Length: 170
Image (cartoon, rainbow, N blue to C red; front, side):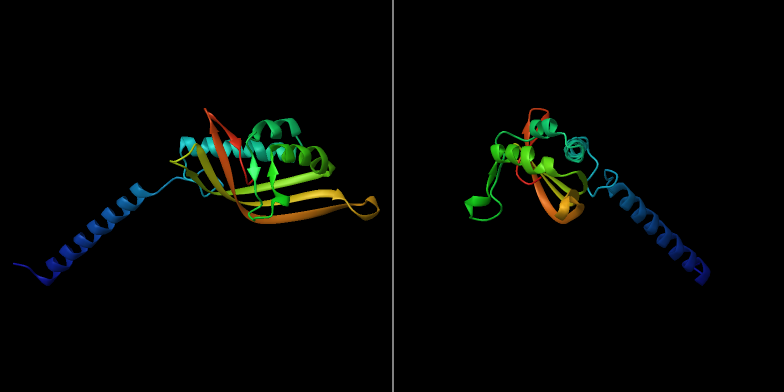
């Protein structure tokens, strides 16, 4: 015979069972992320973030040789518009780095990686990120001044065997 007490106990057991199963499903479906990023933690994504971090550190250290080695010889950036006067290819990157980049006296370059997308159609990886770039340059009367830029961007990497080359965007 079912008593009100038995019915209540059965309902509590069912509710507890459903709750436990739901929690197990949620835990089982959760993703792990690379620390300090919004990027799913996979071996391939770690390689991408590691490459980007090597590039970021080279920028902060003014390591021109390393930066140029990491930039693809096929680099091309159209500036996001139809005006060809602001387009930049590998030679333009090299010229910028050897002139204006060297004028900076200090650089702080922080990146928050938001997403890594692997292209199925081409040997490309796209990295969506937010960056904060602070740099010290000579100001009026040769006094140092800091400038800062914060923005969203997308980096295009070329897959080169087991490595990458920087394409447009970084």
